[in-house]
Image 1 (tube, rainbow, N blue to C red):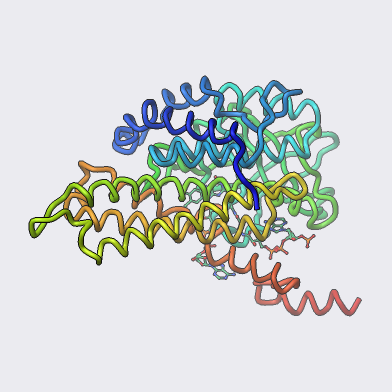
Image 2: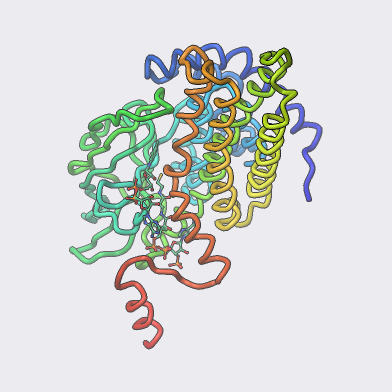
Length: 399
Ligand code: FAD
Ligand code: COA
């Protein structure tokens, strides 16, 4: 098993103090106003929490995913929105570029995140959510450039992010080549920001459509070519395992924040002439909350720590996200319950935390789809979900 180093413990303590002092005071207002927290972004950038994973060669400190996870949890205790910005400022698209990108692509990505840009990842489409491989956004090769057309939705940071990693299906002479990853910047002709979703929680980050209308991307901004029919996509998903660990950690942090408030309140609030923590019914709730959070933390830290191929492992990332996201829903609701009517009031952060935590069994791969991913790894076999998938697989085996 692993142990946090003295430097990591110090990093964790610094992030905790920073989150309490700088991030927590604005969390309620961010939720109420539904405005992107530029002030927090500025503070996070100055504190060095954006671009932590960028290698020294590109101006970053080259820290590990485990270091980032420690910071994310502390920020999320105070504000889920700000923690999600830290996830995308260090994992997901940045991770993919730092692993697969050219020198130029790495420089561009590093410049963006180190100056506070939260990259956007564009995978999901109205007709292709869990079934991401059924995306219809297409990139037609025209000599040394690609012309992209299609619509993505639920893109976190639409309209505020500058750096975009776009997944699209490549065609050459109208022949499908598989899925590849492209880099484009907001402001490029043909990259349009569409409707914003009225989201339940995490309201300070816009979730929008991103529409591509003849967006031109030069060959040098192709992050991973399709490499046959599937492999480009597989490489990109490998990088996405890091994002899943990050998202799971935001869920963990939000829930830990709610738990800590409930633990304190249970010792202050009196009913029947005694603090409510003296009732065994609540003691057992607190014990279960604490135990589940600790288990989620260990799964996430292990997934971040055991980084095969430079990214968290697919199986470990999926297991950790399933457990952390489901735990977060339960723990935030139990924390709210311990506050009674006060928990249901918008004057306290519990209802916001319960709304914010709700997203993590959906975004970044649903808890159901991730179970399929885990099953596929445990059974070491393909588990096609399309109606004709088993038939296609059998045909392929025959050949
Ligand atoms: P569907 O795929 O339509 O699923 C509907 C239901 O069916 C779910 O319960 C699902 O689990 C279940 N289901 C589907 N297939 C199966 C199966 N084979 N077995 C069992 N159950 C199944 N996408 C991006 O590309 N970039 C982003 O930045 C981004 N940010 C997001 C932020 C938020 C807040 C949210 C809510 C979503 C975000 N997404 C983003 C989209 C997200 O990844 C998708 O919502 C997710 O992959 C599920 O797709 P869907 O919503 O279309 O649900
Ligand atoms: N890590 C590494 N590789 C992965 C992966 C992951 N998390 N998920 C898929 N792959 C690889 C597969 O191993 C496969 O590679 P191979 O062809 O070399 O064997 C390839 O990618 C295609 O995956 P497969 O499971 O065969 O695709 P599918 O058509 O059944 O689609 C997914 C299933 C991958 C789309 C589905 O499991 C999934 O993850 N859906 C959620 C999408 C998501 O997270 N969206 C978030 C947007 S923010």
